Structure formats: C-alpha cells, structure tokens
Image (tube, rainbow, N blue to C red; front, side, top):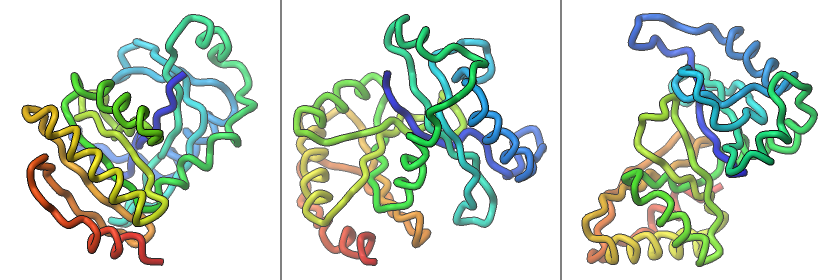
Length: 207
C-alpha cells in the first residue's frame, strides 16, 4: 500500500462560494478515526484506497485545513485488509506523518507521467518520498521529501537536478517550505545551472 498525505478540505471559500466551518472539519477528522472511510476521487465513487488518519490544523493564512494520511491499494489483498465502515484501530500509528510536514520539506511538482519514474529514481538513492495531494486529484502531482539536515537537502537538490538533466523535457518545480515559520520559496529546476541552494536551506532549516 502506498502512503500519501495532503489536504482534504479547508475553511476557505470555495469556487461555489461556500465555506466549511472548522467544526465540520473536526467532525470529519473524528469520523476518520472512528471507522475506515474510502479514499474517493473527486466524490465520483471511484475508491482507490482508505483514509488512515486526519487532523485539523491552522494554516499560515489563518484559515483551517483538514490534513490527512491515506493509503492507496496496490492489490485486492490490501483492500480486503481495510474493510470500509469497520473500526479504524490504527490511526494513531500514522498521525505523526501529518506533523512531520511542519519541518523543512521539498514539494517537488512534475508532470504525472514522470511521477513513478522520479520516485523510483529517488528510491534507488535511498530517499524516502510521499505523494502529496491538495484538495483535488486533478492538481499537479507533488512529491513530498522531508529534509532532516543541510547535507540531506543539498544531496536531494543535486539528485533532482540530475534527473532534470537526464529528462530535459520534464518541467520540475521545487517549493521549499517550513510550515512552522510560515515561509516558502519556489524554484524552477534547470539541470544545467549552478544554482546555490545552500543559503536558502540554511535559512529554512534554522531553528
């Protein structure tokens, strides 16, 4: 089962001029922790996985978001292991993955047809990644890479540049974030440039 994280809903006014209350988001999180709820693509009844845990957190603009961790099924056996509407007894095992997103991270955006190849490329280098979804499955694919140190950040950035050099037609953007500080910076990756990532990483990793 592939683990993904993301934001399911927020208290922002949506395209239908409607707004979900914080209390409603909290009720949704409680439902996830009570029973297994299917991961549904755009509410179309296409179930591809299961919601494992959720948490309501304040966003940097003052609004509230329902952050989630889910698993997407890779075979029928995995699906059978999480029968929908039965008690969710494992949500506490995954809640830390939501809080991990507060640390310094790379959010790497690239075309969907390059997603699996990119993740395998990083996996071969022993780099852990997670897919990150923001409210819509039609949004660009984003790969989340948590950064534990300056050296790790430089290494990952150089690997991303190397991938870009090998796939020059692939457009890659990196959003470096530190949610605790409420700061972010977006970089468009060019495999041939000598962009100095170190000063930016030092700023974002500073305690």
